[in-house]
Image (cartoon, rainbow, N blue to C red; front, side):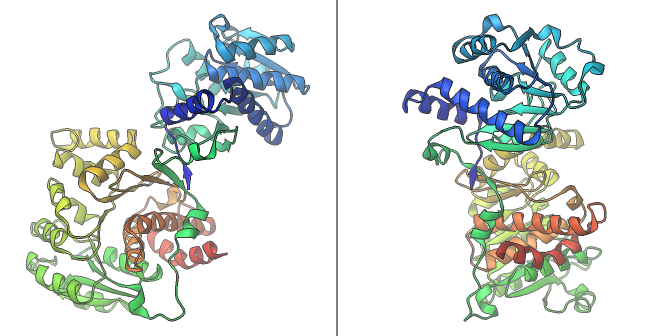
Length: 527
């Protein structure tokens, strides 16, 4: 899998490459600049180019780009921030660009440019700030960035769009909106976390000569999941096998008015390859379910009298798991009845098989996440941002207080750094966490995290989380490691959504469409 670095991790790779391996920094800068030029010539082979150069190494890359484009005969104008402050490799490349005859202007001359003077195919290269940004962008650079966005020309960002935090993807006051970004060695977290991902445009990761083992270091614990990774994770289907070979999943799910969630989770589970699926439901709903199931089996459970599962059903559930169950999935459509939290916490503590927890199962754990460490078996939690906020708030893991204002604040904190939120929770609770959203991030108790690359906005519709629960449960039942089951489930879930959106469009996509798309995804991955 492709590693995804923080700014500090990339700086460490730079330092080792220059200081210990003897590759001069100016050589890396030259290769970086030339790699950007190569992409520009491929995608934007003509047109006037305005290169905006900051006062650091990102600006140095810009001077290399300008020099090379000028030498190739392109019309190039450079606008530089305080060139008298340049030093080191950036200063060397500034001087070289001047000697090559590149027109270099003060950045003050860029801001008043009239958009009417732009040629139809004018381009802007953003080499202003790079990955080292720590604070909000202030004047005069904020005026430069706003001008770039106002001009409406295609923008090529060097390393990362200026104004985007390379670690969190947050906009630091204001940010360049690029059409494509060329980064070096490894992608950065901010390339995939929103809103930074929306500012980056098409992303290209270029090799400029870093040592391969540095780029694949175990110290970099965040990775991006692509199709080849999913192909490598697919569970095998032996010719000599039977339904028992692929596990038996028990869903404790469904309640009066919420039967669809349980059914979708169960059907997705079967489509994803589980050998058998049983739905444990309140006994008052058996008739309603029995008329709608085909391959799925039903386990009647003690009822509260309100169409919800009773706490007294615990013995029936644990007995089933002890005799037949491979995986327990809790939550889709379960309800928030007063007895549910006690039932969920008991099952988490006593289940001898891996457990997947979603929806109302997660709500039952709010304020009681300490029970997660007492589990006898691996736990996978699949919250969306709102559910994650309730887990963090009521558990005292992040901040204090309650109420809607506190929840809004927590959701904002989560979205401000989805990766660190997921890693921190997984490590503290010793669970596998699937933080659903854009993008979905999967984290493990040992601090690893995986950014999903599949999926689309059409999947922001009711029931898609239930489908994901079913798919992850299916891969667990096929004896996959919990982390790999989560990563594969998330990727295939998104890929199924992409396949359906390609046929129906995003606006009309519904959760049951994703279930129908699962077989085509298996075929796609096996091609």
